[in-house]
Amino acid sequence: MKFNFGRFSCDVEVFENGKDTVLRFFDKSKEQNEAEITNLVIVDSGYGFLCLRVKGRYGLLSGFLDKAVFSSVEMAEAAVDFAEKLFPEIEPVYHHVDCVKQVDYLEYNGEY
Image (tube, rainbow, N blue to C red):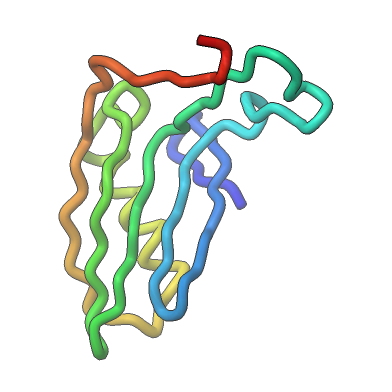
């Protein structure tokens, strides 16, 4: 599945757990295949996640998007609209999505 906004496009994976759903925005070309998983493995975090929780007839959408990619309010709103359109039967959907800037990360690769 693809998310498109203007000239930007990225892959989207959908993970379901009962009525709840997580959408992962990422670049599939940065994913390592099994043959590439040998010594040093770098796992790309992707561009963000949105989580849709269903509470009765209401939807609660939360999550975070990478501000370096989702650089405008309009682009973040387009991601919210994208998620809502996947589940038109859930209405209304209340949302709170943070656009975040990565400042650091933790890494463990088994080497050190």
